[in-house]
Image 1: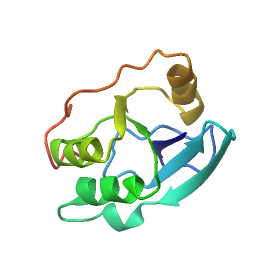
Image 2: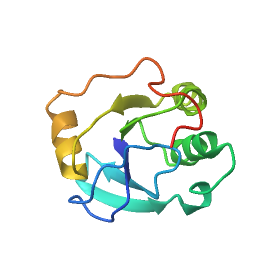
Image 3: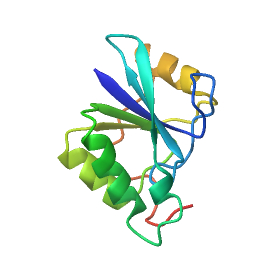
Image 4: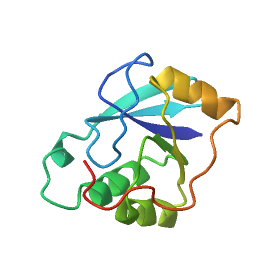
Length: 120
């Protein structure tokens, strides 16, 4: 199973980014293989609008089943839910910390957006 995590870095010690749609990168972690890839999200960093929706569509195409991020707005949340992706809000300092929380069952699935649209 693949999980997407928002970040600005390229390894497991990188910080977990608090933003979903405008996160610079997504780390796609494969729980079965214990491997990861990093996917660029630069096209959405300075988008006037639609960053969350476009980011959600991009990770849905990567066949991820869960997203771990700091915050997720309403439009992105709806796209992710429609794609069957579970969303987990997390304030862990690093990707590694967030993965540990997820693997140990300490993260609760979000059932609604936790910020308004165009949150920066």
